[in-house]
Image 1 (cartoon, rainbow, N blue to C red):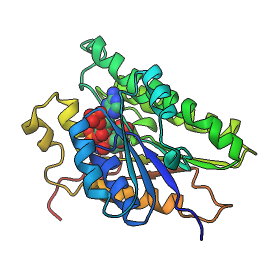
Image 2 (cartoon, rainbow, N blue to C red; image 1 turned 180 degrees about the horizontal axis):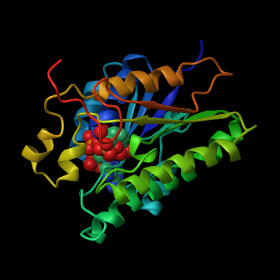
Image 3 (cartoon, rainbow, N blue to C red; image 1 turned 135 degrees about the vertical axis):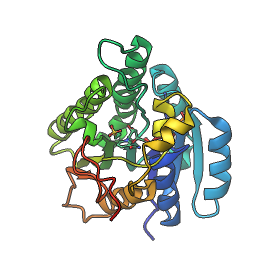
Length: 254
Ligand code: NDP
Ligand code: 8X3
């Protein structure tokens, strides 16, 4: 009997990460769920343990020492990580470059870029040793173009795009698949975080059109990880029907 795979998902406490964890669980992929909100991690563990084996790791992806320690502390049953979903991230603020807040800039670059690198660095050696593994980096349409006031968030996602390409080049020949999934607008807690808890402003972002849902992205991630061994989805951009670019979203009644 083949052993079930194990996936580590960062940012599994909400949105795209949670939807991916749920879909993986229902398809018998064992899970290591990561995030900072421990109560959520525990509640999700209880729910998804009905379907698969689940382990939780609470850490901030900015903390490279904690990442190394937590990953070294994994129980044996979870120590082989077959799939890494680098998903943790957010936008902080939506301000012009001249009005931008430096703490927001630090957060976006430290979490979206450096955090992704730290987690990857901690997991890659075992994938290289086994000559097998699958890394999915969650980019964004913001990594393909720049929109007004998106400046540093867009820079962070352009960096993810470059890192994704760099990883694929450097890991070529090592049996490890590297992929970027780049969503357009997805209705998650993303805008609530961007607008610092202003739920009214956040909800307006998704009004008068039909945005992607986190489950739509989870489906695509699951598709990517279930291709035959020789097939790698290298880079995939997905938008809802109503979105044509970061700034063109149809809000007319159909
Ligand atoms: P959510 O806000 O719903 O989820 C973000 C997740 O990231 C949470 O689970 C959060 O967990 C985790 N996270 C944030 N900061 C940290 C941190 N410092 N350390 C560890 N975990 C952290 O947003 P989405 O699901 O939308 O976002 C997921 C990814 O998708 C992000 O990389 C985002 O940039 C990207 N994306 C989102 C789009 C959208 O329109 N929603 C479109 C394109 C890309 P916790 O708070 O518990 O730590
Ligand atoms: C999230 C999509 O358009 O808000 O990456 O930047 S957008």
